[in-house]
Image (cartoon, rainbow, N blue to C red):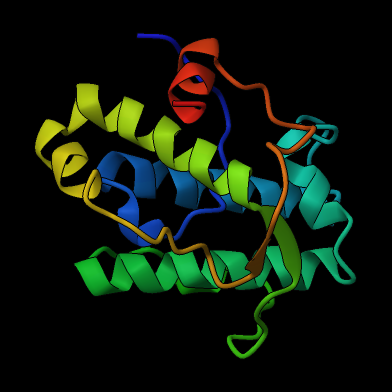
Length: 159
């Protein structure tokens, strides 16, 4: 299976399987370190652009991570909340995300789950309104410029 790289999902973490949620937690913690200037790698990673461009990047990534933490807590996972440096649970709708980006990410998740968790993929196919992590708000528009879309998923998106 093709490797897709770091992914800071815009879609709500409730849709992720165990593997995806744990990976998101780890990648989110890494992203937080990058935004704190505590790493030399990933500093120009395209997934970080939207967080870097927010009014307060550390608060935004922290609040994003807090919502991932809450989903882990809901499922009984033991994510360490102390790793989230700063957050504000009342802070929502900070970063715009486009309709087609949300659709693309959901298709990407379904693609991954088809191989990893087919039953969950089948269940998610019935989702009519895709929710996003609360730090995002949805606006009309194309797939994000920083995205590196896979052709097979673009074909499905246009159907």
